[in-house]
Length: 450
Ligand code: ADP
Image (cartoon, rainbow, N blue to C red):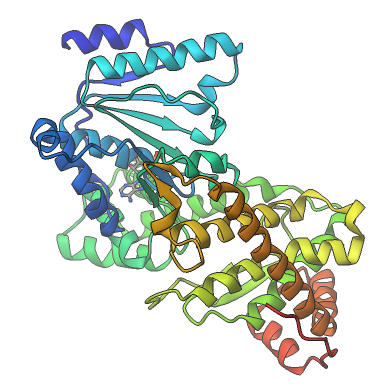
């Protein structure tokens, strides 16, 4: 085990330390561009000295964000494995659930351990639990990889302060991505033949829109267990479909939405979904069409479902602005219908999502007055820019809220009609939404100025 083994033991309470993770980029499938993006970091970690001599400094931080089970931890381990450097892991929640002093000591401990093994990697899962005020110790040779499922609740200062050189979204895999992931996890499983395996995996990839890598892995494991239970030698179609059904069961009921929806929430949910639907018609996205929505589950995000993204080539500034307007819909309709003092949590996320999109547009795309090139000055915001950024973001938000409410007023009859159907049937399909939207008598609005 070497020296790291004993270190791992002494700190084992909160740090897990691995001298080498043994994970490589081959273990992560789909979203190939992410690996390409991270390859450069691996090269720098590997030849630290050589790069330092050339004046290229190692990136200080990488932030991976996206839904749980999409392989963020796996990627962090793969970076360590590819670079052959030690891997320290902790969770953001480890640092906050205790007396402040103890937590601070833990952070210090973790960083000093990692530093003594530099170049090394510290992986902090649920980094959103840590505020931005947490001190930034000198990191020489330590790469911090943070992961979060909740970019929306991440302290924006963490992003602005230049702690992360790379912010990478790890999204749900596409159909090809799912196939590639299934192939990885089928490597150690028995199938009748390579041809049959390929056909079966393709079928499963078709049937698993919105599944994460972790869920796909579960399907193959479950199919393996079913096969063994039946005393069969090879995984067959029947076992795979059975495993898929089971995974879908947990997929559909394992979330926060399995509760019975109380009557008083139904009306709010119906309005929310209707507003989201009308905005989705107003700003149609041909690459990511919506398919249906319902009021059968309570979630803080809209229930609207979408078909797989296809053929998206590039996003224009207006696409970003439109998505900010769309994101405001749950909040705008709830305020409109129930009053500002009666807002509830089902629209709470909308505001943070919209302002996060606005910040992204301003800080990351270079498409606004303060493009990417201007906002950093030796890793920090240039003086006074924080205030300007906030003012600009507020301007976008004000515009988005106004635009959103004017669309909802204009199409108020459609909002009501969709709400009625949702209350009556519990769900509504895209086709019916479009019919209502196209035939809705418009209520004229004064134009809003951008
Ligand atoms: P996250 O950190 O994003 O919650 P994990 O990295 O813990 O997700 O994923 C759990 C497991 O799911 C991984 O160990 C891996 O076996 C599988 N997995 C997830 N995404 C992928 C992927 N893109 N390719 C291969 N396996 C994956």
